Amino acid sequence: MSETHVSNPTKIFILAMGSTVLFSLLNLGVKYAAESGVHFSQIMLFRCLLALPVVLLLVSKQSSSQILLHTKRPWGHVIRAALGLSAMACFFISFKLMPLGDATALHFAAPMVLTALSVPFLGEKVGPWRWSAVIFGLVGVIIVANPTGGGSQLGAFFAVLGATLSAISNLMVRKMGDTEHSLTIVFYFTMAGVIVSLILCPFFWQPINTVWVFYALLSVGILGGIAQYLLTIAYAEAPAAYVSVFSYASIVFAIGFDVIFWMHMPDWNVWVGSTIIVGSGLIILYREVIHKGRKARLSLYGLTPIRPTPADLKKDHPRRRKTDRVNNQENIIKD
Image (cartoon, rainbow, N blue to C red; front, side, top):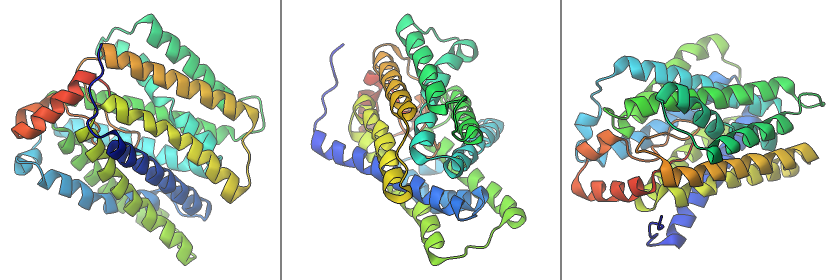
């Protein structure tokens, strides 16, 4: 299969890597706030509330922006939001309980779990290459989690649980993609995050003790919104297979933050397990470029529209459809 041409690789590299750096800084802010005693519902509130203007901006740029707010599957959005927000909460808790590098590596178990679950739930056919990648990837997860070692077993549990819930959530996205625009899914997920966190915060609110914790919370929302916007532009202008690869650099940044801010050097199992997980993820990525049908999924945090759903192609203007066809030729998304 011939590769789709990337017209401006330098620009796409800057956009994709920039979003990866900002998402990594977001995770740093999450960990700092969580370790300072802030409840995950407060972090979720800042994350979703400050991301909402970005989502509305993306919606407003579509020619059928008003139609995008209508949905044919309200209960699908409710279930998808429940799964996605639970995954987000698990990710935030895992950042509090274990080093950033360890948690980030375990979060990348989501593509492996999603590939495995796509067989019984979606009836997809997974070949020996991807099954091998799933098995080796899960071995990498076990090595990083180190169940017989001295690491945070509870943190590893929440990280893997978050990855699993994220995978199931993305299965819902793929089911809904036949009738729902990707931005419709993102909009209702973000709104659900704001509503749920506003309901939880009065019961679990913890005082924000220092101005630095407040800045960290602001960074979670602001950096996340900017990163989301950059990544959306990158996916609109380049094949998803080219853009997706850069997300794995977040493991490197996370380990760097551990060393710089917490003076924590990862153990051998994190290096070995992370390498296996990244390698397995890249194999799945490559094989999906060749074989995957036109199904949509979203990023780990569920806030970023990664590639068009079938419904996108029906509703957007011709210029957007031309871009979507480029992405669809690649048949690949970022999990």
